[in-house]
Length: 165
Image (cartoon, rainbow, N blue to C red):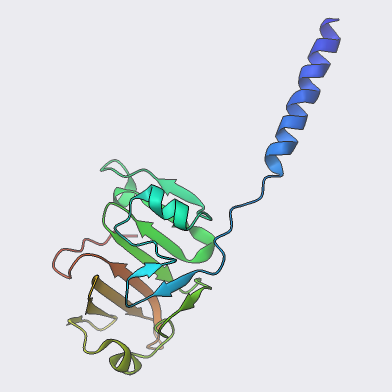
C-alpha cells in the first residue's frame, strides 16, 4: 500500500512536470519601433514594468525596480535585442533586433540620419544624441560607421542616466 501511494505520487509529479514543459512561450508578434513617438508596440520607456509586459509579453526575464537591482530594474528580451530599463526610463535596441522601424535608423550611416532626425543635440566620435518630442534618442556607431545600437528615453540629454552594461 505504501509503495503504491509512493508510485502514484511519483507518476503524478511526472505528469505535472510534463504539462509545465509543454506551455507555449508568449509571442510578441511583429515588434515595431516608432522612432518619432519613442515606443515599441506602444510600450514606452517610462511605462511601468507591468504595462511593458502586457504590450510585449515575450520577455525573457524581469529585474524588479529598485536600488538593489542592477540598473534600477528592467524587462529583458535577450533573444530579441531589446531591453527596457524601467527605473531609468529608457530602452535599448541592439543589432539583434529583428523587428521593424518606421524610419531606417538601425544600420544607417551618420550622414543619412540628418534627413530623418535633423542635427544631433550632442555628438561624440562613436555616438550622437537627438532631441525628440518624447525626450532623447541616442545612436551608437560601430567601427564601420553604421548605427548598431539605439537608446530611446523619455528624459532629456541632461537628465538621462545610462547603465554601465
